[in-house]
Amino acid sequence: MEEHLHPSPGLVSTVTSNGPPHGLFRLPVELRLIIMEDMAPHNFINFALATYSLLRPLHWNLVPRITPERVRQMKDSTHVASSLFQRLPNELILDILGRLRRVDMMRYVFMDYQVMVVKGIAPALTLDTIKQLKKASLWG
Image 1: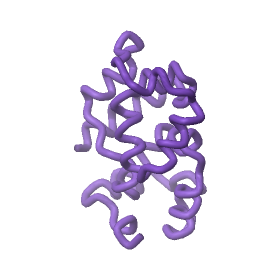
Image 2 (image 1 turned 30 degrees about the vertical axis):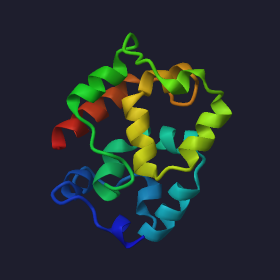
Image 3 (image 1 turned 90 degrees about the vertical axis):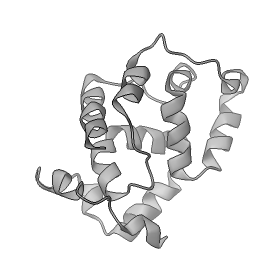
Image 4 (image 1 turned 135 degrees about the vertical axis):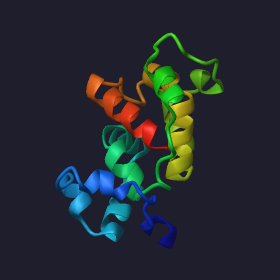
């Protein structure tokens, strides 16, 4: 669990310089980790996408780095990769995702995002979410 406590160098100032973060991010690190680890997969996916720009610098090993190209693919509804998951029932997909480490779960969601949206597991991206993901993708 110790590995979760070390934020990505140089990125914390970006988050903290914009004023106080959301209330959850004011909680002690250990409590935040317990809450995030206990979230159901679909809840964590929603949470991670909505708070990526805050979550990534503080808990870099819970969510993977995202590239500008990946953000473009995620927002392109015509970019639906042929996926084995497309044929599985949602309950089985969520069970599989729930057995993965959070970072691996989000790697898969980023890779196969449109399938997750079509299946109703991941939310459609709002303009605000796309904007914050694009900005975060430039941090590296």
